[in-house]
Image (cartoon, rainbow, N blue to C red; front, side, top):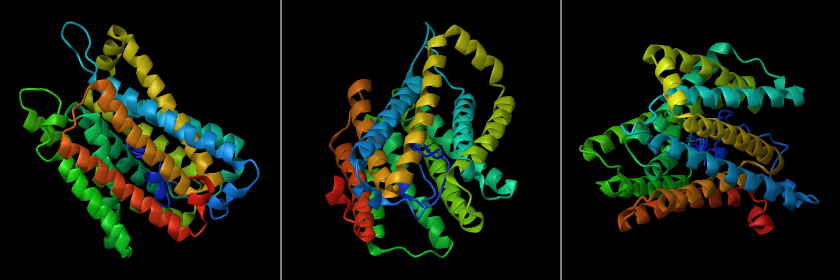
Length: 370
């Protein structure tokens, strides 16, 4: 499910939990990479008032933050590490997305075994295929972009996925509140400040400007895919009402097929196998990366069911912020004053969006647990 970035999006979360509905994880937004999920009416934030709910809330939100923080760290480690005297880098991104889809699909299948009631809802398979196509496109674009831009740049840029989602919504006839447009304006300006001539956020190389431009194009492609995925998921859910686990299973199933075809077309099988044999440590990192993404999805799914999408959104937004701070500290990225202001504007816009939703819900959630 689209992973806070995508997958429940870690990138994608990648804050994807806010969007209603969805069931696929892409954070890398993933982050995560981004998670966009189908909200169940009976499972709302009022559950916070139930006896013993705060410890469970703490476990769920901590699980999301920890799982996707490790997920983001491993993604940056995999895409930035250099091996051997030739300083080889991992460039087999169809393989990376394929492994992610397989792990996510396996988690959904196992979860459905324990929740057979979530198997209800018959969705035409071509609809799942269409969602999977853009879902894979979003993950592939955001992952490949890390060859050209830093992880903080990716996280900040992917945080403006609200923009393509709104654009698609307007095209489809949806109306938005004024506060929504204010949030989008803050995020857009913040992203602009962060990436504009942002050489301090660009990885080294002889053609830094060109590399940065290519990375931004890939992120723009990923955001476009996110916009279509969210809009089409919403339409599918409104027509057929599949469960979140169904969306997660079938979108990752077809995503696995599509990425395997990509692996064959790109000829990645033998080079990737040779790379893993020469540098087995990176395979361990990738398997842990996929595992943490899948674990994060389980925590997101539980949080949505017990406490509602707004609580989940808060956790995934915090995860993104922590990931940027950790990335700057651990990987040595430099953020100038402009990038810092841009980062604050982006997360300020996300926080304002969350606050407006809490206020609109009228359930006093902030007083209950924040």
